[in-house]
Length: 302
Image 1 (cartoon, rainbow, N blue to C red):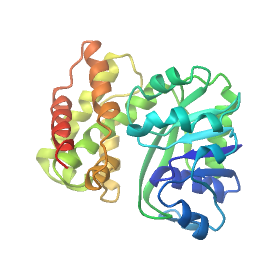
Image 2: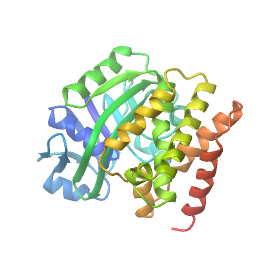
Image 3: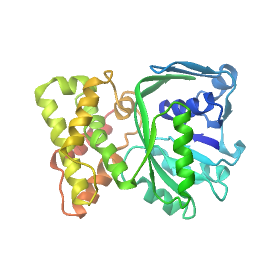
Image 4: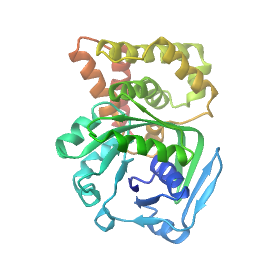
């Protein structure tokens, strides 16, 4: 399939780079490092094996890109207003748009903008960063789950998974709501806590007090998901997420990097939207509600 990448940062650069390195035709929308990548290519430093793409299909605007079979949206959700102009040039009647973004409610809002477009969620479990032009630093993990939101062609979803796996990216299909809420179990505690306490993932778990707080916050997400009828999400999954984080390289999640670089924080979809959805269903997440309030305060005083 022909792929388009909107947002060639730590996530889009890694997944798009892996697909291109495997021989897939991949077209990258670049921003600040467009000229650099056109001249020097894209370097992916990875714990699973580094590689360099000498010739990259790089573009400064989507109006110059071809229609694609799959579009991976790897923008921060704070930039989703740009999709109204970014997406149309990349679409044909069978294009699948995959939102590899953090949060709850993303697909509902994008579907409202593009009622006839097939959408899926991409839930990436990865430690990756892009801190200089044309270079992605993939530290650990990297697997991704896809949840079908509105794609009527299940074979296309399976082909997507097959091509990711062929490129060396562990990928699978999961039920949509399960996928989104399982990702929130990790995202809601760790993204905000690393900002509020100005720390990294490892230190949060090494301290007994914050380790317990992280677990309590995770259980709030599980409780909300169960209250909404989401299956296969429980205390065992929380223990797995904590174990996975214990074993990963000390890491600054995307929200911590956004805070450090004075970029808008993804508070709406990672916190406000799931908290409100749970509240409307009669379930409250008091510890995460407090964290949301702290993040809103911090976001005003960069």
